[in-house]
Image 1 (cartoon, rainbow, N blue to C red):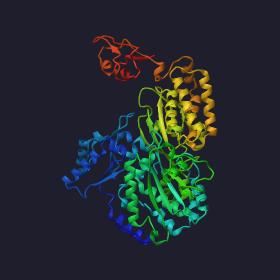
Image 2: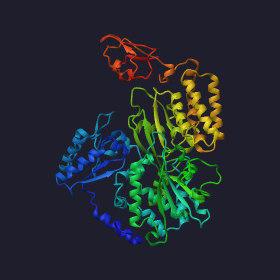
Image 3: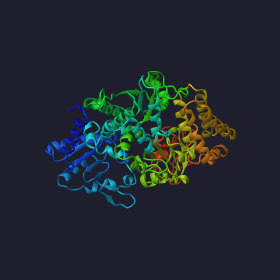
Image 4: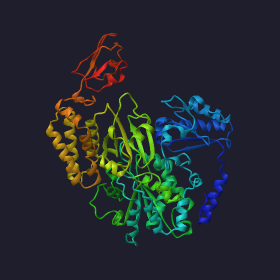
Length: 615
């Protein structure tokens, strides 16, 4: 591997990579992030490799293994460049057929994506509604590079922003550019990134400074950071290099949850390759600037996403938050000034500085730039969605997500992870911004977006997230430790038919107290699922309390299953019932023994004739 001793060496290497690459040669691109591998992408990779070797197509067809492209619902998928042809849900046979067609410069028509609304086959990826309505500043890079090959990143102008500012700009100029861009932290709170950098720059020199990448992505249903780490790890390294130069930091830490083995593998490889090139370490490009990054694996505690708990974990201590002030930029890791940004924030930095700040500020309204969301739940098109700030929720759910996945209509969406709020369908016209979501009783968070339909019980949702949060509370702060537990108990009483109006009053009072008196962000935002569902779905709470009824048919203590006249006596429900509570003769209407029924719903989920009713 080349060792770069100057900017001239870097420029010469990039020119060589540009000239050596022939963009006209057909390239098979297979997304093989965690989601792709779980769906069978590794089989496609092996098949493509074998076929290219067997048919002696080396040099005639390229194969690129990348990270996630975002459309997880359609994995494993294949993209053909430069044509832009997209094939969803490809199997091994399909992979062979795609290579056959590629040799003949043809398209496999029956493997193309089919638009459900129009029934038309769509050839190009960019014409598919899921992609067409996005603005993919970050995710589009995943398609262009093999995350294990630093030369791929260099070929698409990787590290060029860092090298330019390292030799042409003063640190204060870099901070001003970041401030002028309007970039705000993508980890949840939305604090202005440039201002935070300025605080670290102003911190006393002489004892060293840290910058940290917070990759402790612990929200259920969220995987934005994981996909960036897996698909484009060098963008985070470059962002941290820029941050270190601008603030005077000499040490960097990537804090990654240990449940992300593929991300850790790709990050370790990226750090090793960057050091080998001379882009990390001492006297980078002969400029006298020195900076290196170490990787620390977190043990999976949700509270370690909070920056003071994260710093204690890096120090080898129990991950517990501490009071602020002093703030991390004043006293952080080992007492040294420390700056913490999350993965998506660091990945945005090269994008901001690669072109002009003026161009970046044109993207988005209310807040600048784009935001990545993990769109999951009762939605047709699950996956990663990147849209400009200010995009209405309705566009994400209906234009990109394709609307509800089943017969039941969409009821609400939760944004911001377990500490976020539930926004009803009637408010989907609100734009995505830090301020608008806060006014609606939710938060931006790291970018989780869970869609719920009419079969979802909002009390059950609040109970689920409160159960998660009480288990993840570090226990140091009494209001959070006992408050989240008591809120869960109150919700459990309501869901089980033991609730009273006093439960509702106590629940609301307790939620407001937690917001005001808990020590860290976990406790302060923990009441959001409860307060938002009380605000927008109070009628469901009253149904559970006053009428002992769950309108969605979810809460086991308030429902019963019966079999109606549509029953054909096929016996499928008998085999599915774990309690042997269903009896009846073949081809005769069956009966459920209510005393033995556990309300698991297995019978209803397997019945093809809609013969199982919930009461």
